[in-house]
Image (cartoon, rainbow, N blue to C red):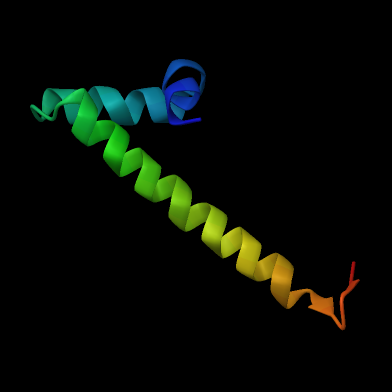
Length: 59
């Protein structure tokens, strides 16, 4: 997922370019992006869980 974002999402591509200019390796850049993605998914799943009540979706 991170590799696809680096190739197709302009903001992620820009982030990778900035980190490359800071002499970060591709491995370090991917690690940071994976952590970002994990934090984002965790927050999203927690929000989804909080929006359920007794197993029913609240929309």
